[in-house]
Image 1: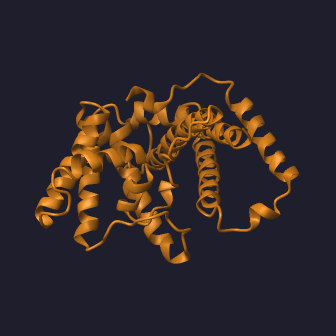
Image 2: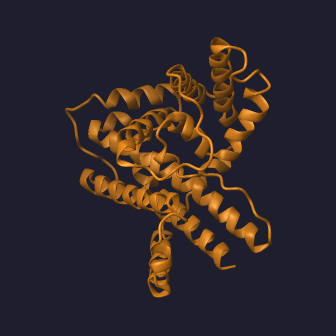
Length: 286
């Protein structure tokens, strides 16, 4: 019951605080990209990367925690995907139930990587295109799947092989690859979040508009920046601790009082941030 409660609490924190706390500034930017400058739109893109991760991984943690209360152990659906050093590792750690299904029931039956390079790239492209269409019959989802198919093919073209086993804690040598992978994923997220293909192009073209750095809407530009950086830092620290669980001795040295204080602060944050308009789970529409 204690571990189940911890899962539910962390899931609620990710959803209510990290995801819903950024919803308003993201909606304002994607609904009218022409009203925002490059910096404001860049903040919106990073904020959505945080929102969709907090929303979906939070939902998965709540589901796992509730199931555990009934003695049912569900598999992990996320393994700190934004710490991935390449796009292949990202898809082995993001939405693992869907990515595993796509691999087992689409990629491998089409031949996987057993029929030469060209067919391997074809199989990757078809799998990711169908993965995009699974989210909805819209060109923006098609382009999102196409981009990931290109990224995966390019990674395999470099002679890279799929990582196996649990990802190791990142090292200093991994930092550049982690940052590059995160930005490729964030670029593709623009198409995923946009209401249409034209909306996505308008958003991306706005990233080159340096003349207007104002941020109309609920938050000023500085407030949006502080909020995104703050929530992003919480996400990164949480993922680093989670990635290193079982490898560091800090857990054994942490007092119950400190852990209780952290849980209490988390519950206070949930209570504070849950006072606004309720935001539905993003993945419920799929």
